[in-house]
Image 1 (cartoon, rainbow, N blue to C red):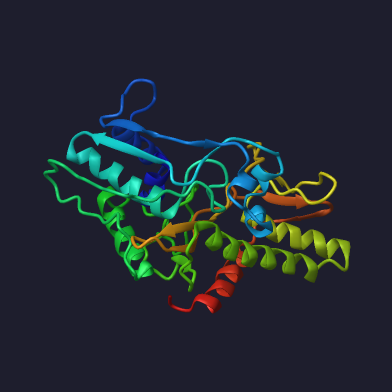
Image 2: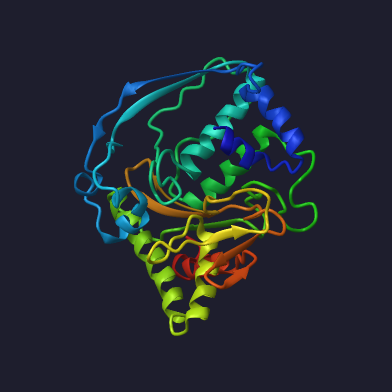
Length: 323
């Protein structure tokens, strides 16, 4: 919830961001959260993700990190839980906005940016709210319009930043943020097809993602140095990136020891009220690495180049049009 609150806020002044976050969520070892959270439910656990969830090669590609490690526990699809939030309206509105973003733009647990840990809301019952905290937790047939409308509402609930990250014409924020859905920077693509099962939706986008990345690798595979350059371009989809015989892309020219950088591209599945599923691909704003930092693979070094992400969205846009 805190992560999505920051993404919605888009405050470039990190000190001010932390001060406001602590007031809302608690922190620094001194201030408790002003909102009480209670989770109840009957969570069913499985132990063989690949077989029990009928994952094929393309979904397995998205879930690569968890499937290559053999059998491991996971929460079975269809498990239900009840989340209760209790607090004053002035704080609850931030939690409600963050919860909306967590459910409909992200996920929980391993591979949540590659289609894992999707949540769906089966009931939302606000009680005794004084302020107008209206936001929809029930997707409509026109999913794009519904997402853009409620993302805008979620950003209104958390309030505008005092120091916007895009004040210089491009996002220079040190962390991942969500741009205004009406802006030209907003990246969101949806599947044209509505699928009967969640794994069918993931299978479709997993195939597209794998084809795109492998196609880009093959184009530059004739000469080693050119291949190294292509791998450095692909690294903007997230670190760590390991390519054959344990060779990994490294981050240089920074005081921080950066070994991991979450992908600015989120792949997930959204469930409609009538039980159908669509895949969604969302692009986050913000600097990929600190100023001056470079990526190294083999003999090649270069600054992060996000043009490949733009190319991926362009490819998806050609297949989804405006749907």
